[in-house]
Length: 512
Ligand SMILES: NC(=O)C1=CN([C@@H]2O[C@H](COP(=O)(O)OP(=O)(O)OC[C@H]3O[C@@H](n4cnc5c(N)ncnc54)[C@H](OP(=O)(O)O)[C@@H]3O)[C@@H](O)[C@H]2O)C=CC1
Ligand SMILES: O=C1O[C@H](COP(=O)(O)O)[C@@H](O)[C@H](O)[C@H]1O
Image (cartoon, rainbow, N blue to C red; front, side, top):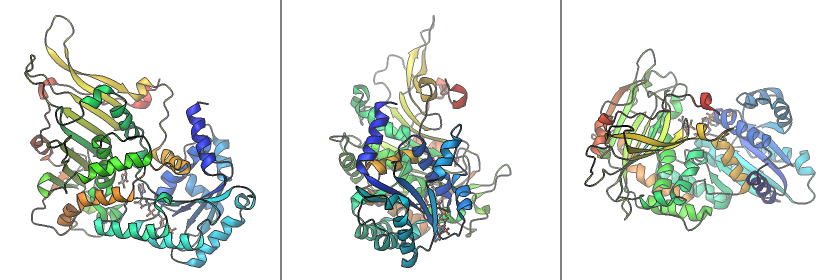
């Protein structure tokens, strides 16, 4: 057992002395079965759940105990730990009830209170963690019902709220006011699961623990930054949800903007959660609202027997103009970044699955080796987690030619027995440890919405400047994309003929 792991376990035990009941609201849903319960199992398997813990699912669907167990464990990968899965199941209960009915919540409260885990407490506290795996439309009634009826009077309460937090500045502020009237900011954890991803958590280490990067991290050295999210599948089955939100709210306003803040913020005074979030807010304040001229929007159409967005059976509005692809440029008006475009790109139904940050440096001034390519630092968030630096080198041998190559830290090659926990596992552990660093603070959220709200309103009112380009399912996005990134300074050196060697390698095949 490593000391770091033991430290985390000790932090949980110290924070939550007594009993802990984790209540998963919306336990019948997609997120609960795909992410929340597998993450809870991962924590249990690794000894991070406190000894005196119970997990109670809550939703309207009526299910018997076995149906519930089958549903919430279907996505759990247990490998050789089938006995652990059986003992995990013994921690699980289910209560069915409504989301807007006090009697249902009183029933839930009584169920928890009478459970062995709370009854057995004579010292310590009866702590409760509420995880809202629910659509945003019910966040407020559920929060009110919980506060009135299920709030722990003799222990710590924590409320985890899923994204999206609102639709725009006004609705988000409204939601924020409703929640903060019920729970303190310290009790609320606004989850953005990208903040739990290994390579996103690594950004601060890369920037602030390396003298090399620290000194080259500004407008004097960096020409442009791209943060890219690509998914190879469409909205199939989620058209109802997606059409209301669109790609900008689904991925860009939250996940990609969070990555941007970590790349762009100043060094926090410490690694304390408030110090980090203070710096994130400061940099968000320097970003002007995104202008429609700085965007490229798209919607996918059918190709190679894959349906177009408008053919999605779950989509009600068959004339929808909701973008499924967006590229949008953020400008940060501060001393460090003025003039450097941060190009956010996100799309569904593209040619590959990939999330990465690509930082392109300026050309070498007065270069002896004319024509040599620009340096690029790439942080590959998923899949195939890696950090690699594209740089120029003499062609080995008799030749004096300069070629583009890389310094490559590919995790699956470098670290043997690599286990990267799922983002949700890491974030739920943070909730138990009471660490808010990787959660979104209320003022941070407000600033994030300010950057996107004018653009979103223009798109929704079908402003004459809005132009949604079509792109084929499985393509690289709208054909205008290459010219778009070029316009903002991105320079791809075709002559260099470089591709990252790991591009087409399956990481599991590389496992040492
Ligand atoms: N699914 C995913 O991969 C991700 C989801 N999220 C977020 O997590 C939250 C939950 O998502 P997900 O699990 O996919 O959602 P679901 O649509 O599966 O909803 C979860 C549960 O909420 C109840 N529910 C659904 N619709 C309504 C409604 N209109 N009114 C009241 N209750 C309703 C249902 O339970 P019952 O009817 O039994 O009460 C359902 O099982 C959302 O905020 C989503 O944005 C975030 C990241 C990824
Ligand atoms: O929040 C969301 O994220 C997923 C992508 O998450 P990832 O961990 O698989 O990268 C996205 O598919 C979904 O549309 C969005 O709601």
